[in-house]
Length: 106
Image (spheres, rainbow, N blue to C red):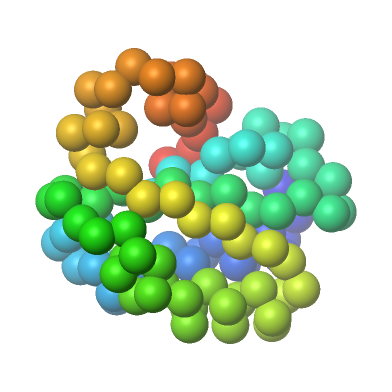
C-alpha cells in the first residue's frame, strides 16, 4: 500500500471517528487494497461497522461530505458499506466471510 493510500485511510478513519464516536465499532479495509494487489486505478473499499441498527440512507448522507472531499482531493474512489456489529461478527454469508478473512481493521 502506497503512502497516499495510507494517508487517505488515516483521514477517513479520523473523520469517521469524529462523526460516529462510540457508535463506531470497527472500520475494515477490504478488497484489492487490503489484499495488496491494487492497481493505480483501484478504489478503496471500506466497511463501517456500527454498534447499533441504522438507516443506510441516513448514514450514507452523514459521511458523504467527508468521502467526497477525500475522493476529490486525492482523485480516488472510496466505496463505503455499512453493517452492524452483529451482522459482521455473526452472519456467515460470502461477503462477511471474505472481509473477515482478507480485511484489515483500520
